Length: 197
Image (tube, rainbow, N blue to C red; front, side):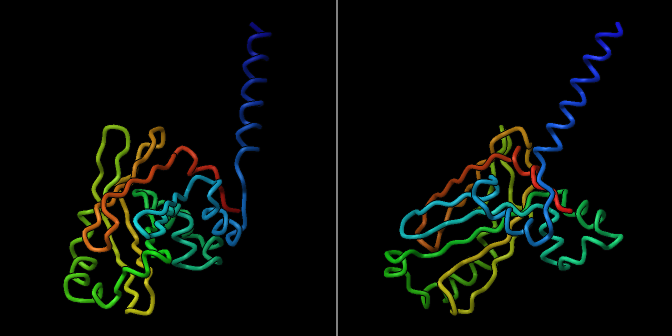
């Protein structure tokens, strides 16, 4: 009995030590840099039909830091701000034409009424994620307008919180840029590994 209790306690301590070593505690600036590191599993990218496409998972702590600044981590409301943003999964989705895409992309055409209406009001229906057997609709959608100054298109998206044990498939059914049907996969089980100090 005493030996089994010692073995269980030892295994628990080893497990806790391993878990704490696998977690990375970072400063706010390092945390924001690390989430964009492809090896962290929070970013997926591909090139399709003349466009470079990037999907970036935005952890709740990153959203607070970007919104309120790095000093927010010392604010007594830090935990409540992070908790508020933990109810959904947030992403930044960026579409950037490559050299071949830029040759066929006419920015003026995309700034016309159809492109403007689509990106402002209709594109939200064309984004969704699949997690396990669930298909999750886009809850929050914001297109960051570029006012013709850039050929990049950036969207901020939120979806219901996905199951962390299932692979996540992100889908976009483009109707304006010529990308067509796009799917990117991410592993949400890796999203909780980075911790901020």
